Length: 293
View 1 (cartoon, rainbow, N blue to C red):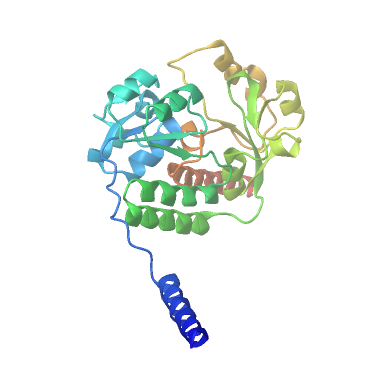
View 2 (cartoon, one colour; view 1 turned 30 degrees about the vertical axis):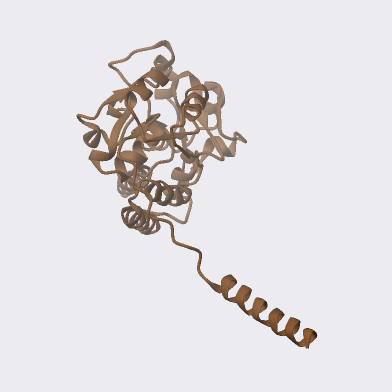
């Protein structure tokens, strides 16, 4: 009799545990979206400005209001800004700090120790890698639907204008002789525009310095300048006015492109890539017309 009772009890317990295993875990109350978001640097500014409600933004970096570096200056107008110091950011009373690869590590570490929630947005080297970051940031700040909409629209836009063939070569040349080769957002944007990166073809990865003589010996079809600021002269920028660059045997004239679109990979990068693709198309068509008898 006892044996039969134990068997019956075991069956009941197994059935009960099975029911518990199948039961859904209790739902947590929805997390309240942050109401005082502070972006630490220029790159994260672009995500916050693109995705957050204006009322949610407690502060952005000073660079986020510079038309040379920021593609979303109009949205930044009137917002509080900071120079990146931890004291300034703390005084803004953030309930979420958005930081990234180029943020000051000591500042972020201090903010974290103070118990301020941190959202890290990593630096990426491919345009298509921006879209998951858009969705991640949007989810964290309580703007899921907006993030999905913007990411999907940008993804479709990229597919529509991307060129799947190498139409010409290009090389970005910055003050001080700095260039960007393979494994960089500049390289990927150029590829989307149908340009082969001459710097990458020379074996350079990421950011490096390239002697002017070597660039002249292997001239690209497009010499791309993105950092020319006549109102802020410097010794390194004078290199961009070097007579040798003006006399380079390039097939086409120097092409100026806004640095704000690819200083780091952000939502506006897609717009910049489309602009570059359209400019290359126009230059190629003009060159063909000039060659016609």
